[in-house]
Length: 117
Image (cartoon, rainbow, N blue to C red; front, side, top):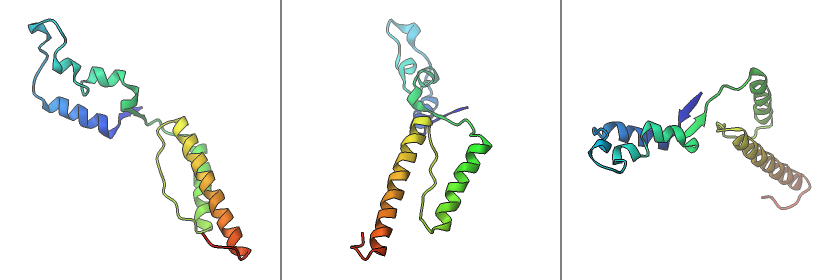
């Protein structure tokens, strides 16, 4: 299932509230109604206007919950974030791994009596 991004939804709402209809029949070029970025035809063709809201599998959610439970168990503060697609998930997972590594290094330095960050 696809859902409009907040920005695309705002454009679509503006389009709907415009109150005018197509005026292409009055003369040559496409009218501002047809070329409005919030026009459903324009939004349908714009992949960046959509968020993939397909539900993830229960197995994947269990895996995610295990990671959350581990952070809670270790007292690590975190922010749950939705992901747009597989690429976004990978980027966020990479950033999460990088941050956990930084936390680990800081804890090791603290345990060794080094400077705290």
